Length: 173
Image (cartoon, rainbow, N blue to C red; front, side, top):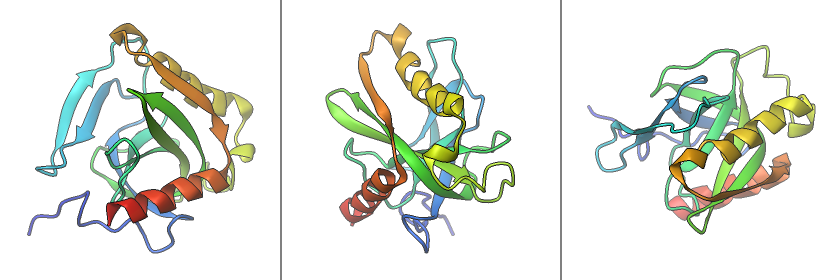
């Protein structure tokens, strides 16, 4: 039996408080992978043009459709890089919104529920200020050498993340 990680995996039993996450890129990665929605395979999109690396595990919440017509993006803070296509539970604590190609491109910020170093964080305010700024800075810098213009907004609280997740789950249906 073949499982489509986008369509067949539930977003979780306690959405938006705890969500299932499919990892596409491990923390520290410099290759941009993304799910091919037609095949369910992970495809290489590009090598990052800038001298940056993903500051957290990066993936998506299954059975969601974001405003940019892709699955809803999520960054999961964890001590270690997690292998691509791993299913993990994460707890959203905030979000960052980018404007990319004229569309809202929300990035949910979450913590791995199975990581004791991060799983006590309940909101973005619990993170060290520098960690939140690092996440925001990554999105300002990672497309710079591609001559792509993106606007990165301020980090937003957990309530906004929950609203974005609920909307993306409803949009998927």
